Length: 391
Image 1 (tube, rainbow, N blue to C red):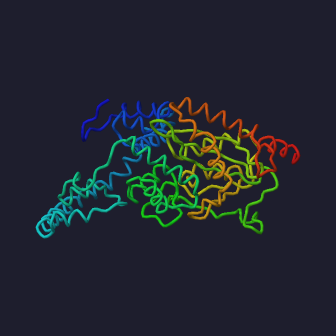
Image 2: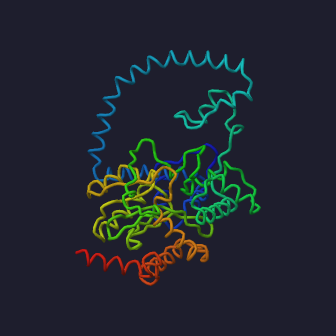
Image 3: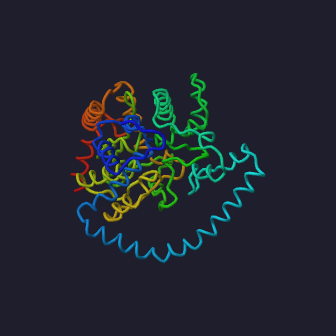
C-alpha cells in the first residue's frame, strides 16, 4: 500500500492494519515500513481499537451514548461559535504583527514540544514551513535497528548506565550518534535512563496515573539485598526489548522472587498496557496470587487496567523508586541471562522462530538450569515444591 504525503487512512484501512498488528506475524517496525506510517501511529490505532472493541457487541448502547453526548455539547457549541468570530479577528491581528516584527529564523525557535497544540499547527500559526523545522522518519532503518541493538547490549550489561554513559560507550565503539538520538532510541526500546532525562521515556511514569511506594525495603538484609524466604511473597514484572533480524519485539515476564521461576511471559510487537495485563492475568490463572507485586513506574504498570487487577485480587502494589532499576533486580538479572544465553547468539530471522526459541529457553531455565542464587536448584522445581510445603 503506497501512501502519498498528507494522505489519511480510512477506518477500514486502519482496522485491517491493526488486525495485522494483532496477529504478531510481523514486527511493528516492519508493518510501519510496509504501510508507511509511524510505529507511534500503530500503537495509537491498536489502543483505540481495543478500547472500543466491546461496542461491536452493543451497537444500540453506543448509539444512545453518542446521542447523549451530542445533546450535552449543543450548548457548548453555541457558545464556542460566538467566541470563534472574536478569536479569528484576534488571531489575524497577532499573525500580522508577528510576521512583520519577527524573522522566520526567530519564529522557528518558538515551536515547542509537549504542548496540546501540535508542532504542525504551531508552524502554521507562525507562518513557517513544517518541513524546515523537523523531519519525522516513518520507519526505522537497518542502521537505526543496529544502533538500538548496540544500546540494548550496553544497557543489559550495565544496568546503572543512563543515556549519557551509553552515548559515551557508543562513541568509544566507533558509532556516530548524538545524545538526543540515544534518548529517542531508548524511548522506543523502553529503557529507563537512571540519570536526569531531557525527555519523557516510556518507562517513566505517566503523570495521569497514580504511582505507589516501594515496599521491598522490609526484606532488605544488612547488604541492602532483597531476601524472600517463601514463594508468592513477591512477584516482579517488567518488559524488555528483544532484537531479531530486521526488527524487534517486546517481552513481558513475571518472576517469583523466592524461587526465581518465570511464572508467565508474553511476546508482542507493541509495548503497551495490554501486554502487561495479559501476562499478569496468565500468571494469576496458573498460580496462587502473591502478597506483593513489584514493577517500575512505566505507564504499562501504572495504568488503571493493570493496577485494578492487582487491587481486585487484594495484592499490594510496589513500584521501584524513580530511576532505580536495581529495585527490580530479580527480573533484570533474568533478562540479562535470557539475552546472553539465547537472544544474542540466536539471530532469529522470523517471529515464529523467536517465539519457539524463547519457549525452549524458558523451559530450560525453569526446569533444567541450575541457579546459583537458590543454592543451585532449578527455579520451577523449587517453586512447585515450596508451594506444596507452604500448603
